[in-house]
Length: 237
Image 1: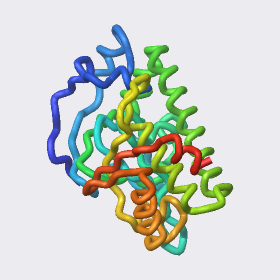
Image 2: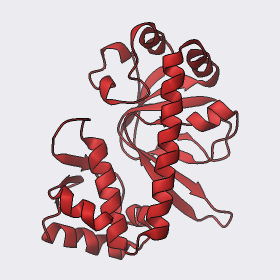
Image 3: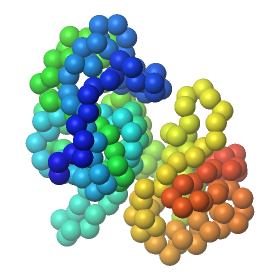
């Protein structure tokens, strides 16, 4: 799907760059990073790449959210993760020269920086800082996959799994080192959230209502605020 807007690149003046892992670069590395790739805004439902397709670019999420999923042979789709600003999508496939393992689809209007494979590999080959940040991003991706698998396999209840997901999104929405309200936009339907958590839509609706009544969260339209992170964290353990 074609982007809604193709934007002028402004990585050097990005106000939130210091809060992100990969693009928090300095000096010449930042200048070279700003010159490569194309910044574009996509509407909800745009497919950035598909499972088993050739990995010819990486996608750095600047704003918005991207749904990552995979499909079984019988056509069942499993939502694996919601990628947030700062995540680098397709990184492992581009570095290894393999195909994409997941499908990436925007869950809301989303701005991404699309960097062609050859340009990206040339950049990290030239700049040790960029190479180190790419390695850290891959390590974080591995760690997140491990925690997601552990959550699904070992969490004894749907409430614990939902609490874990909400806390993960809440922490992602708060700038590092700042004590701010954990507030984010719920880009998934209750059915999609149930898919991610490993439960049913009815259970998700019931649990979200319970969390509101117990003062754990506040829901205003698509916006969710975590009111009691300590209690929600304890529930997710």
